[in-house]
Image (cartoon, rainbow, N blue to C red; front, side, top):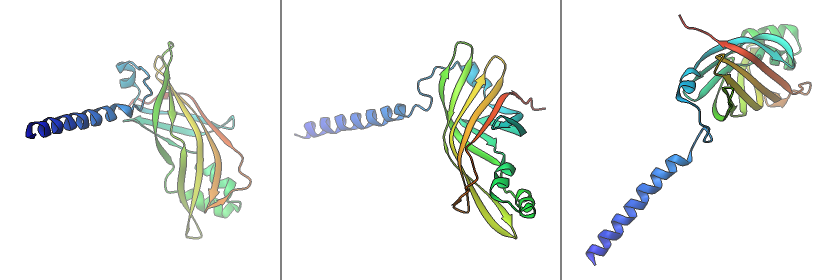
Length: 192
């Protein structure tokens, strides 16, 4: 009887160890996309170029890719101007923005024969804060969808993201229309 209990305990331990090990493999963040190691190694870095907002050239966008995360700046001054109509308040708000970068994770979606790696960025809410008359105002941009494309041959990154809603202090900004932001073939910055 004691040996049966020991055998049963060993079998249970084996199943638990097997279960824990297999669960680790279930969380494949890259959708079984086979990307060569040298391409994955060349991806991290900082890229920059002018962004397009609804197909109109705007400020520079900086994208930093590292450790499964992507960080980029949003055109917050443009977003503030949509929600704050008074020019004096706009100037105060824009000068007091506390952060203009958004960080999210990404997953590999595909790797093409022409060496373009497609990555899906996690959608979500981006909160930023500024001051008007000394009072903190929180604004929220809803990033509906975002995709990044790494051209491994040219070492450039392109992005396409959509902001579907804008809230100011919890209230919907009524004059906000869906905003498309693009970055096309931004070159990798070489650090000195």
